[in-house]
Image 1 (cartoon, rainbow, N blue to C red):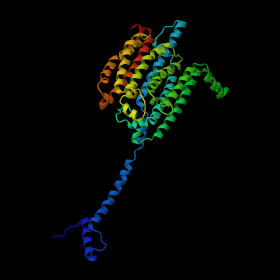
Image 2 (cartoon, rainbow, N blue to C red; image 1 turned 90 degrees about the horizontal axis):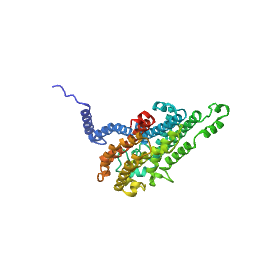
Image 3 (tube, rainbow, N blue to C red; image 1 turned 180 degrees about the vertical axis):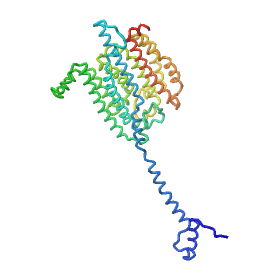
Image 4 (tube, rainbow, N blue to C red; image 1 turned 90 degrees about the vertical axis):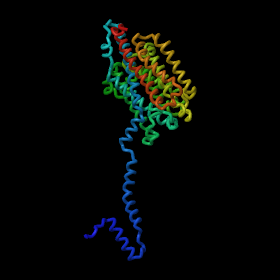
Amino acid sequence: PPPKLLNSKEERKMSTMVTRRKLGNRGVPHDSDITDNVTSRDAAPSSSASNRTDQPSTSTVVLAMIKLGRPKFLMYSLACQLVGTLVAAQQLQREQQSQDSASASLASALEQVDWTMFWQLQATIWFTHLMTHYINEYGDYDADALNTNAGSWTGGSKVLRTGLVSRQTAVRIGTVLFVGAVLCGATCVVRFATTLGGVDASLLQSDGPIAFGWAVLGATPWSFVLLGLSTFVVAIAYSVPPLRLSANALGEVCVSYVLTFVTPAVGCIIQGGTVDTHLCTVLLPLFVINLARMIVMNIPDRDGDKSAGKITSVVLIGEAKAVALTNVIYVLLYVAVVPWLPAGRPVRLAYLVALPLRWWQSLYLNHDNWWRDRALTDSLPFVESMYVLTSVVLLCFGVACDTSPTCAASF
């Protein structure tokens, strides 16, 4: 029969056996040693490939940086500024109507809105909003790290725990956003001064930037400047020492002040309106609703906040009493405030339309120890946030309807 062909492995074994017979096994490695050497050489590249795979890609890091800023909350500030813009249009329309008896309509009111300035201010607000989130991620690092009960809408973004982004990077991004907010705010002030403040833009070339800057500053309402400066102070002091407002039982009030009062107020002022009793009346229920929302958001975070020495209203009174407090707030709001609100009927109805959602949400909030249920710690803060956003959007429709005599008369 023809000789059997040997493969390379069998040839190596035969060669080793022959060599051992000739040399008496002196200095010749065992067959298993040869096999191990071959295996280790083959395995070495895969180990190197594994190390390369462990390194996060650039896109992964960029997405982590974006998530760190929690952009899902930005729609609140857009809707709140729109409320202030509509109130300003309403004020200007009524002032014009009292002077020349012109017919009032929603379309004529919206024609007075400077939408370029609206988006310039919105860019300023978004820069400030994101800056607050990035600095808050740095300031709340310990509390967020100790928080094992956080849901998808509480306890921060949770990105810093992964190690993809460092705390120092969060501060650097926040600093860049602060600069962006200041620059965007400056463009708003310049546009206001040159369109509504009576400052001639040619002054920049004729008299120079210093004289132009003083003229712009003199034409800018001081209420806008003071509210803007207070926002920057609160945004930074909210998370970092020495004040660290969010850790000293002032976080809920600070968020409500900036989001539901300052944001609509500067939106009203920049369009030529004023912060009067009517604007404050329209915003009062919204301030209270957001205050209750922040209490609910802090309920699942209580253990982590308490362990890190962060004092919130929920840390002070406990989860069960915090739920009871929100019940009292909403009962008083919908029984004693909204029905008697000295604003137009469309505004009052706008707040009442969301009442069924409020009732449904309250039923779940009053479940025993819902903050220990993983599904509810995800869903209830989310629904609470959507309730606030829904209320703001409905308020926009209410103010718009109140601006039109035809629409307001239908209610």
